[in-house]
Image (cartoon, rainbow, N blue to C red):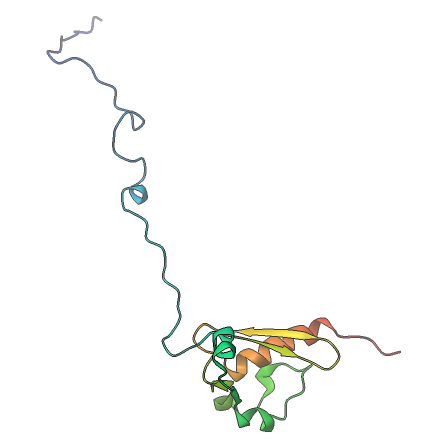
Length: 133
């Protein structure tokens, strides 16, 4: 059996993505934009507040939590208190210093809440569990 070969009038060209000027993947064709941070207006950096001499006022609800630092914050009975801001004016990050030298940092770009602080404290104290024999 003989196969018929037809002559083409146009010259052959390579079909290869490496030769084409278009990008290899569709994601490369769009310019990439940097994601904006999730900060909220009215939430301050604690260093800026210290420079301005603004005094932080801790929420009084923190005194009535009746919470043990080695138990989960989920055990706190008053759940609505957990969503309140830890201090006024609201801040992004706070370092909590304990008398025995432990330092805990609570962060939330929308303003540190009481729950954020409790979670950070619980996470540190959970690591520090010691056995008494």
